[in-house]
Length: 247
Image (cartoon, rainbow, N blue to C red; front, side, top):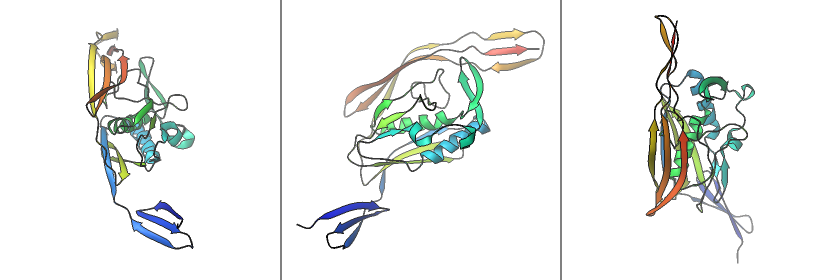
């Protein structure tokens, strides 16, 4: 029997035979499994910068068969030293400036691609308040190092992450070498929607919006695959009052 070892290099499978002979066979082109897009419209320049920096680091990640992918492990810290800017994030019901604000849109877009392609979800966290760039229940908050997004590739083939920004669109595509699996559909059950009455502070005729407010949601997410309904998550997002300041 002739020993043979095969490795992938670019689009070629190189088969090394005993005796040093190498045989090259071209593999099929990568097959897109799923593409998911979120909108950057309305985001600040700093948020867009941070999301784009995370996209560049995410792009090209290869998730091995049965392998676990950590978003924080791939992206690293969100700090000035790694090129991030201060940008608005939600904290205790208010918008504050923090390093890496906007990175969560990249993690959320990747999460939705992984969820719909059938990946196992090992760790995912909801935001305190529902973000506007995705439906409630489908967000994925991250904060280095303790709040991560981790998924597992359940397939017997590697999956590559292709991430990019095109205008106002943040796009994540998952693709595999010559493979195609059945996609999953997602169902959301919104159990409750809440609103807070606007708050007015100060006196005077001039007004400005200090906080635009947030709608509250109780929502559960299910994944439908091969006719089976799988519970994914249940989240409660509190409402936040709109704040009008008079002066």
